[in-house]
Length: 226
View 1: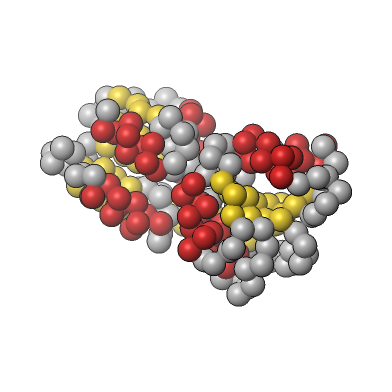
View 2 (view 1 turned 90 degrees about the horizontal axis):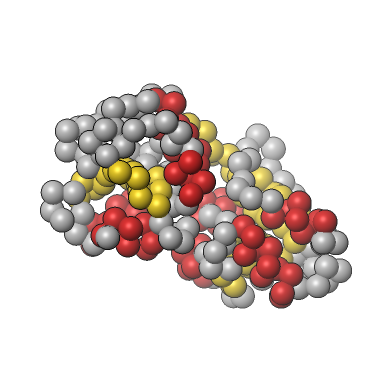
């Protein structure tokens, strides 16, 4: 595996953690994010004390925890990695849906009644799926609270294209950004965290396109190893 070099395209600081995970699996890495993260112009009001929080990314966890020291809310996350991130920030009650946005909806409906608690999805301006809309139709007091924003980098990162063999992509926006730059990737393999991310690569021609079986980094490593 030593000849494999993976370009980690996710945002910082998560990209550094991902690079460590790939290195521990035996791969070389290059960190060069395709997206940047920052605060929105207007921050949302804090969730009600009895609210249930939904996190669908580590960025959401980080952004929210930068706004408040409170950790009393119960949390539902899209997957195990986000659950671990929330747990590391001292949220006491964390449930992982271990899937995608539809699994988050199923978990909320299983764990909480529609008239029991407000449901607050903590995310960015671009969210995947229809969590809030689906829960609202089911009678929940559901709202998206935008705590961070993401945007594409203006220029394609300067990389040693000869040595890069694989590109790890963590979101449809990052994949679309790469497609917009339209680099020559004929000799590279993409490793996407989800089918939606792979689809956003559009007409880029890779040597191969790998998609994680579940939307998390361990599954990306498994796809790459296979």
